[in-house]
Length: 144
Image: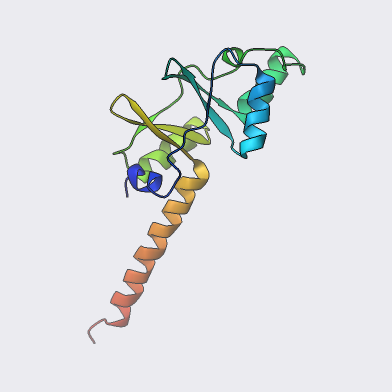
C-alpha cells in the first residue's frame, strides 16, 4: 500500500501556521483543531513542522513561558518527509527510527498532505486483516 492511499481517506486541508506567529497562537490552533502538528509555511512554502512535542521540548529548553516566542524558535526546520509514492511500510519504518509522530508528504516539490503514526497504524492493520482473510480462505479451501 502506498502513502497516497492513506491520504485519499483524509481531508485535503493542511493545517498551517507562519514562522513569525507566536507559540501561544500555535498552541491555540493545535488545541482548537484537535491536531498534533502544524506545517510551518512562509510564502506558501513549507519551512518547518511544529508538533505538540516541539512545544514541550521548547518549554524545557527556553523556559515555561513561551507564549510570546515565535514558532520558528521551536519548530523543526528540516522535518523528515516522504513521497506520496512511498510505501506505508517505509513510512512506519522512518517514523519509528526517527521517533516522529507526524510525516509531511510531498508529491514532487508540492506539499501533498501530512500523516500521523495513527494513520500509518490504521492502514497497516487494515492491510494485515485483508491478508489474514485471504490466508484463511486459502486454508479453508486447501485440497485434501
